[in-house]
Image (cartoon, rainbow, N blue to C red; front, side):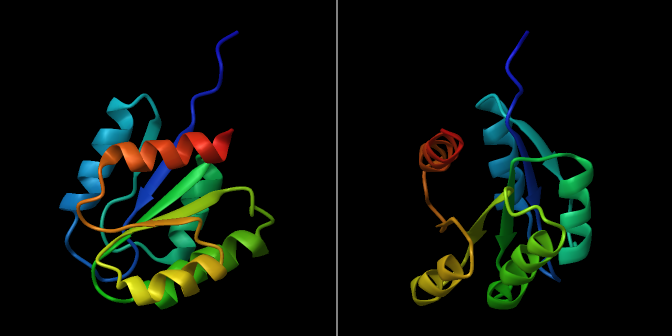
Length: 131
């Protein structure tokens, strides 16, 4: 029997209309052997969590450039807790000020990747977390 592939949801919460980075990460993770679901632009935290549960994902990668990460990332984590799905690991990426990263991590975001991060850092994080 083959080992279950790691499933990763890449999502663009909020009104951010720039998806080049999210599409790049989705493609790079797929090329690295992961099963990737990309939700497209302008998703609500509720729709992201609903899709994550329906798709039985292991990780949610949130991509945001609009500056609303301090509201939207914690909302996704809160909804996962409400749905008893805290085992889904949330990581973020995008234009996120270094000063905001500690607060996001305290609220449950497991990693934040800023522009220019090599894809190898993302895959190392995923492999480390899944054990």
